[in-house]
Amino acid sequence: MKRIGVFTSGGDSPGMNACIRAVVRASIYHNVEIFGIKRGYNGMINGEIFQMESTSVSNIIQKGGTILKSARSKEFLTKEGRKKAYEQLQKHGIEGLVAIGGNGTFTGASIFYEEYGIPILGAPGTIDNDLYGTDYTIGYDTAVNTALDAIDKIRDTADSHERLFFVEVMGRDSGYIAIPCAIGGGAEVAMIPEQLTSIESVIESLSVGRNRFKTSFVIVIAEGEKEGNSTIIARKVAEALPNMDMRVTILGHVQRGGSPTASDRMLASQLGIACVEGLINGRANEMAGIINSELTFTPFIDTITKKKVINPTYTRMVSILSV
Ligand code: F6P
Image (cartoon, rainbow, N blue to C red):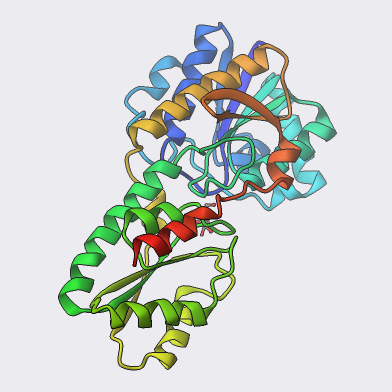
């Protein structure tokens, strides 16, 4: 392995820069030339490929976003797009790739590997923490802390005005962000796609709380919640409890930015090095992750198709703690 390419793809996450830095520095450490690919698979297709040096990644470990930019490429979903990408890699003599991203990124990587045999290893970069094959994804810890900080602030105003707040956090198909926000933010209810929480049970919890003289409430809703989004849920609850003053706050993309926490920087650095050393040692078509403090490599196909389960006792914890 003489030349490796690195790119970020899909939704950005805090710590992607720390991971790029680790990939660049580990490659140079092992005397491998390292090339950055801009704008994910789109940049691969369009030949936005440039050589990186150690100084290319100076002063970025603390920065959110990704210096390589990111995209969700439609063209790479096509055979013609992947062919163009392969030709660009050939042109630049790139023999292996490190993909930093989530589900969609690894689906693309897996198909590309099957078609062209270019070894690719993945580092899990997504705030959603929904990837099988790692306990935590890069950016998750930062996103949770950002959301929690916002919820703390919402609690102040909820308390002052004696209101109910529905706070929607990110997580397309997953409640991983919602759960620690609900437990750490002292919420009354957590609504996540993995576990059904009926509107009736939400109304019941609020009524019980009111009977116990609680005056303010926070309900954390994961974006992917099956009962509907936070606005729909709030409307249904308002119909049943018309005297309750309520507001909806959607935290949205604020959760995707910001300086990565210490644990995200550590994780990103460890997995970036692991990907480079994995490629050098002949690994391919896998995602690097940490499970029970051990470095592991999981086939892309498993990271895409297998579901990482959320401990069902977490929602019970929310109920116990909000008594
Ligand atoms: O995958 C990360 C994520 O932030 C999800 O939580 C969210 O559903 C999605 O990306 C939003 O994507 P976009 O930035 O394209 O709107």
